[in-house]
Image (cartoon, rainbow over all chains, first blue to last red; front, side, top):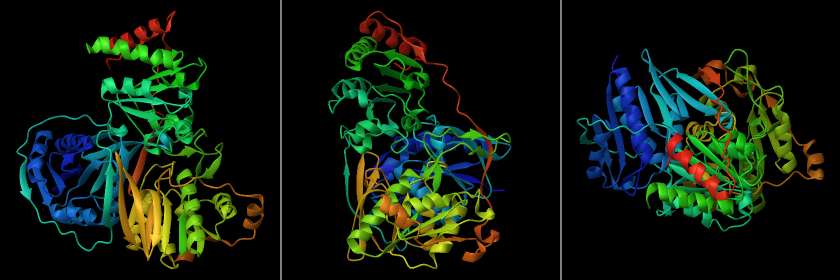
Length: 322
Length: 260
């Protein structure tokens, strides 16, 4: 049986998102497990030379659809082009990042190809030729192991869940035809805050909740800043108007899985836990020693965050020598 | 403007969801059932579009008979009618199967706009809205925080990492909701009274011209369910002063957890 793994890269303004390297590294592990070739599809405009670096993450083949019409991600054009690549390459596994764009593409592609899709996978293993994925359900209260019926199996990996591994392969760039087909969607504009660290990709997230008492998040921003991390917020802080919706971590916000999550002045409602429980290490700082967040944290500090957080920042600076 | 809202009844966020003895399904006996929070945004947005452009709002759901409660709540908020696909063969469907059922119903209805939640907070699949749009061969814009309709087109602010993208689509189209789109209204008492008299049809797969073959096999098979590993932690950092605690915490993060 011929088989191949096809990873789909995600780039914004010609720069690959971190989750692309994660998906590609996991794609390499799957391809090795199945004993097959890993290809990566790159869609965009003027991205041919940048695409070469994907060989570093284990791609045997780099398929580049370089066309001005693909400059911005649009669901219809991207689905059409990827479906064309799939028809030609006939992969048995498709892997991509479960980002905002990646989820959108994965869902549409799954329906187009009538193929099974597992969204937001946090683990993948190959077992006797079968691919088994693990994905959270019910806001992370339950982990499900999933097997697929039919091919190609589409695996969308949750950002910050798969280990990036470099493994130099031939990674020759092949320019492929991009037929965007008929499309309805029209790109108008984008507004991106490129200076801001993306919550779902950050290695360290420091979040503030009701205990912040207002919109001054400077103590939290300073702590996040020394890590190059991101600032998050609880739902109540967003509801108070202290932080924008895009900063919300929780069931109706973003789901984050950083190496270190520091919850400041957050009580630990289930709504919030659903957005951060898959973090590797959780620290909670709260005035109330009875706050439920402490039961879900690896380390707890009972104290006034405005007093404790700046001291933690100073201590970390000492450890890091900055 | 004929608007269809795709709605799912789900366990509330606060509910404990247990795993059944067979390890393959969840126990839902003790859960409190609510409208999926993202679908509440969808209902609210549909009502606002109707208020601005006229027309009617239909709530469409698949689920058990219990889902009638969720549909009635949406009707009490102001939607005009409800349709529930209730069929033993339509339970335990995966995202693609559910989308096939919903699309089969919608194919025989007039519509200009479909609004769905970006995901249901039970399966967390982020899938059904996009798949319904694909089966209906209409454009979809997901994770919408703001929309405006003019001249048969819908302009949407779509959330992406680090900001947003503005996208325009011709109607009919489907959009999925993102928090920030609106604040859902509560059902008023007169609304609740009126909802009791609003039409709510319950249909089987046969009624909508589908059979088991039509929705296809389950393509994603759950082979096990488990609870995530418990955190050993809850380790409280001791110390006389805030400075002591800060020092002890950073020491633990550096030497023990190795994340600093």
